[in-house]
Length: 263
Image (cartoon, rainbow, N blue to C red; front, side, top):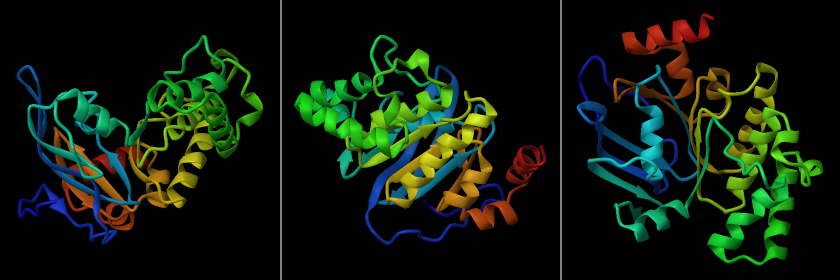
């Protein structure tokens, strides 16, 4: 990111990974009518980096990661994912999405399909994988998220935490290079949050490139390579977890942390 000398926009994080950028965002701007949702966002995420994005509601953090997957159109700026430039052309969108797995706060599972069928559908339809190979791949990831015994159940028979783990496994079945998490625990009962965070932590240790929008500051402090703080559509501050949580440099970040951690 371009460094700035203004008091309220600080870039304090050293390079986490000297390798190439998996995600590159330059001058990203997004409007909803007259509302300027994203303002000149610049961001590079290195291969294997774990980036946690936090900030108050309406700060643009979810909009930003949805733009990466072209779930939101943007009016100005450039996005590259694994060297692929994102445009509005269908071929470009498809190519970028093939590199990305995304998990939302709502699980978005197909209610009429079993867990196994939820996982095998996209690899067969999109990637042309055989039924046998898709099931083999699904079994691997169901075991990875510790829910293989529920393969024949339907989403309505699972808890919220179990459904979210299925959603993670479904995304992994497409063999993505990047995982995007948009507040994946916000819809869960408190006692179910840890089981999803545990799976995400394991993904991080395996070297998956991840961007996670979350208010789970404990997860951020333990797992993230870098924390990015947004407000009013701008990147206000970014730093290592130790720097961000122990010595936030902007008044806005200090206020946010006092409200989140203080409760």
